[in-house]
Length: 216
Image 1 (cartoon, rainbow, N blue to C red):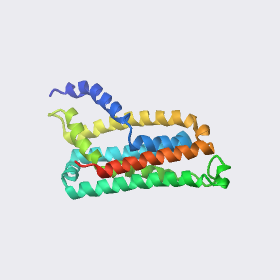
Image 2 (spheres, rainbow, N blue to C red):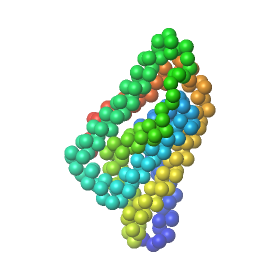
Image 3 (cartoon, helix red, strand yellow):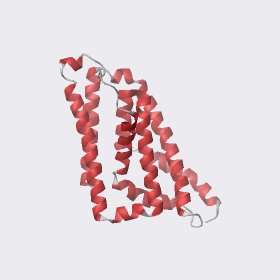
Image 4 (cartoon, one colour):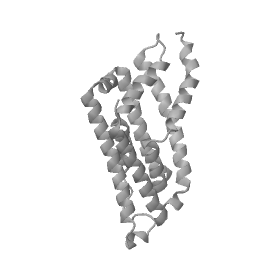
């Protein structure tokens, strides 16, 4: 391929990233719940954690490590179980929050009196959700080589494309967080929050069960 082939492929790459990022999944569920309950600033570390995990998977794919993970039955199973387990944990936590808010004492308040989860905890949740997903490894192996010209270094070109994907997704997800965050006062109403926790918990548990049931 000629050097300009990479540049000419960027629009198609960017469009594919937008379509993939806009599809419903654990990332979308996490971001929307965090923005609804904690506002835009509360969703920022979750978004950055997800993108840090995505970028690491891209680098591992370029280095060939992701291919080993995808090919290894044991590694694939461990990641699948860990990812499903973590999504189930997050979903159950949301359900517990919805159940606790039914008590008279908590129903009188729009938000919990305790401090918000730490920045690093939210960042870690996003990173773990992305890194503990073996489908992310398989996706990176199949996706990036389509846009890497044969005469370009695989690792460096993949790293650059991954940076572009991270930049696009950060803009998209932070825009989503900003839109949802503007309605934060409405989401913090006791009845609305209970429904939000119940719905988001159900979605996360369903995603966890789907991941647990998935095969190659």
